[in-house]
Amino acid sequence: MGTGGIKHVRNQLLKKEQGMSNPLNKRLFTLREAAHYLGRTLWSIRELVWAGKLPIVRDGKRIFVDINDLELYVSKHKTTYV
Image (cartoon, rainbow, N blue to C red; front, side):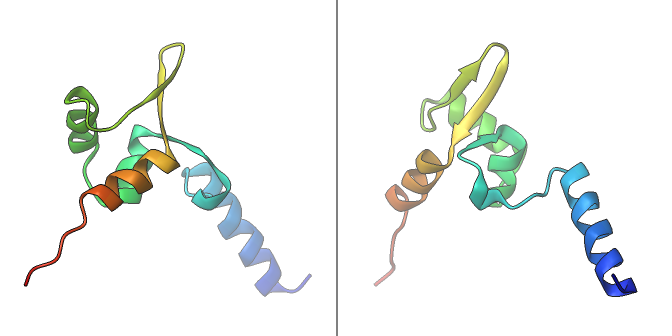
């Protein structure tokens, strides 16, 4: 493996440690990942959850958002200006 391959592997490991692995392989996102996915703040995602606008999946104390619900949220809130 050349130096380019080593850099690629190192970058992939770094991204994984930082929680930036390929989001398309996941169905459940943490609130932080959901915020990143939608380009919003963590608190804005919490407010959507608290307002009942974004459903969650609970696993004990952990809270997740289904990617399908994120896509549905985006679809429902699309608009055009005439």
